[in-house]
Length: 304
Image (cartoon, rainbow, N blue to C red; front, side):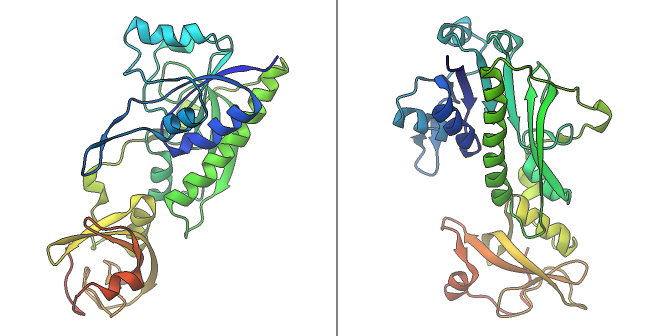
């Protein structure tokens, strides 16, 4: 008998794990966040998980928060053996966690107990961590605090953006959850160990004020900010967002000056940030060569 699995997830990160479960096990239902208006036109947008479910005729549910009995009953009625959660975005109450025979397992994008919470990839890059990874935990009522079943680490290279790490971890999470579920399907015992509470750090959501570049900071700090979530500044009353950049050195320049025709900008410690992928307000991302063809600036012009 194939293991009966229910899945909870919302963004792109959840898809590799969902696809693995769909292919290898009996995926009997998915839960994802409700569709909401998004973008300038405020059109209703479905989550990547919902789109996958609709395409593959998988029953999909969109409860608000599991505070209503009817929402809890949706999970009870599909009668799953185990619940898998990946970047769902809704805190699950105990009433949900105790429904499946094998409880709920979470695919988390960090080496727990480091970076519990909403933005583990971004926080790891911002902190200059040399490694991160995936942790599969047996969920409990506390945020990312369950016992560790399986972990795998990956190296964070200085050149890596959050998107690159995201994609690598999503694939790793898919591989690890497949291993755990195959053990469950064979009725093999799943070993787990408690997290070390003395080593806990929290990956709080990224606040808007964190995304603006302070050119008085060192080049390395600014580069991490860019790599973590894209960071912005203002020039000619226009907001420009940098999604990727290189770094080099140039002494004796005050911070926040455009120093050459390639749009390199000086930082607080004499470093230069050399943008490679940028975005003007209301435009698509573009490489620096495309950007320079349609943007006017002066050397030694100050940015904000």
